[in-house]
Image 1 (spheres, rainbow over the protein chains, first blue to last red):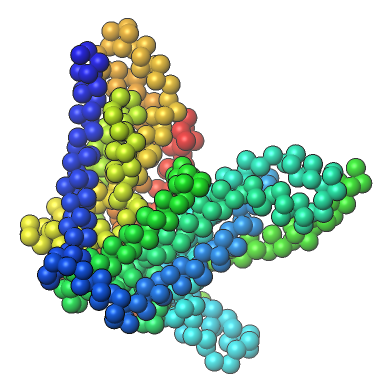
Image 2 (cartoon, each protein chain N blue to C red):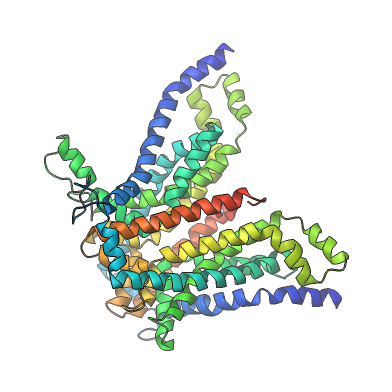
Length: 277
Length: 270
């Protein structure tokens, strides 16, 4: 009885947060998702629409395809940075961490805008290329797949760099020494010993990038073109332009389902502890 | 020994490749921000780089345009209550979940973390839909509620990990010596986790200041925070006033980052 009373007292502290999340988050999200089955009439017609209309399929395909390109590019670029962070001098490590944290803390909107300025038709990159005579005409870098990829990779790099770094920092250098003492070439010991040990961080980072890209709105709306429309833009369009809550709900279920499945796989393989930056 | 030296030599090309790639990534990450800050001091009426001359006219313009001033006021009125509410409720919940013996604590924690896992567009659309019936769209209250929800998971994560590294025997000792629970919390627990609490307050404020998607749905022309005002300008014509407000946001983020690093360097905190 005594123990029960004590437990209850601390549980009260949970109440405000639980109520807030319940009423102002779970309830609205549940309502939105339920629209898929009830709006305009009960049934699965919204999912049939998703399947039948080429526009919807194309946008969902786009979204997957873009996430599938962004992920490997981000991982490849993050790898050397995380490596230097983990195995460079302590001073180098501090600088690199600061260097990655600064953009990480800057608003997505500001970074997207900054990238747009760089990539504009008469922006910094095109002026540079024209000035050195590398190209004759300004390259179309904005409002297309190039702008979209540049924006996504830039914003998502820290999500791979940090988990990868924490995996790499834990690798005992003795393993690599052992591999080379036993006669493995540097390349062989990298692929057979080092790379497998980085897998937890690599898989975590890659999953975070893939999942985040699936739900992106600001970057594709600002840097991508009409042909790169992604699922979050479509949801916004369905609500703001057409008031079509049924299709918006169905699209939300698809997006949330994909996110949940991927994060669940991550949880089962690596564990989500690494998600805390 | 020779083998080791050989290996070092074998690594040299890789070191050069690694250094070059790191430099490229650094430029890729930071160059856009530098360009924006420089352009904000431009004297030209368009986004030219390098600028033909320097001036403060875009900052003057920014701080003399009623729409921008109103947006700054709305942002502050929205982010301060949202950050405070999230910090208080998140800290209380973290304390209950880490120190209390609550059945299904892990499941409750997972549910409370959902707002950072669910894509922003879904949360925004859902709140917009529910708010319609309640008349909360276009109100400060609506914005504060939405942002409190989005901030809560960050506070919960930061404070609960700080609580986990704290030695709970200190609290047990205090209660054994006769301190009532509230005194134990205020005199022992709170001072130990204070850096984490303050850090999450800062993070919550910056997150709320920067957040766009929920704000975009819930705000109106009259109640419009900075992020939405920026968005509506960015989607029209680029003009250096946006570079000026972007630089202000960047400076704000930088200050918060430095303050946060200082907090984390202080007493033990992970």
